Length: 288
Image 1: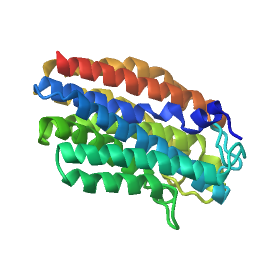
Image 2: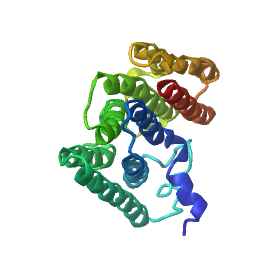
Image 3: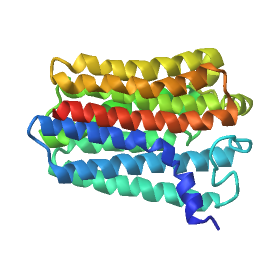
């Protein structure tokens, strides 16, 4: 049976900043507008984290069943390593999806029934990333869906449930946040590019090739902090987000040095750190 540490590793904690940062930044924006509602922010965080964890377990289950993870060089996979049965991992995924659904329904009751549609779309996106007969993650569309759901939807949704509207300000802050969420997936897929190609998992990295995938990663981690400059017209101190560029230097150097496979695991951690630091700086700037 899998240990607690196995289940924690299977939840892929290094990817969780993609779920936390959008809620934190959007809540800071709501507070700046005088509409911060702590219980709705907390529910939004539960939804975001639960969907992220559920997607990770669902990915573990689906890729493990297909054999895609048999030669994985990244963090452990529960099914492929046989630390847990496929049924147990599927149950963990469904339980996490259920938690997200319950919190989402409460949010919809408190704010708007339209959130039920958005929430259902997010749950389906989490499952069909690698689940089903034609998973979109195998078609190179993973990055697009991450940008939409962990950038646009997560930020504007969290902002909406507190402020009661969606505006250009919430849309503007969602873009750089989405870029860094995508960067996490890009570096993950760059690490696995060789194995994915053998398994016919046609991720965007496989389709672009190593060189262009490295260029895409660099563009994302540079453009995200620079994107905070566009917020000057709303909140002058939001430009503090630019300071996060300092923390992008090391992962950029590692990616440009040609590191591959297991050597890129450290870059995933550094990218998560960059996203957290950017989120803190941007939130602080918005509040100031």
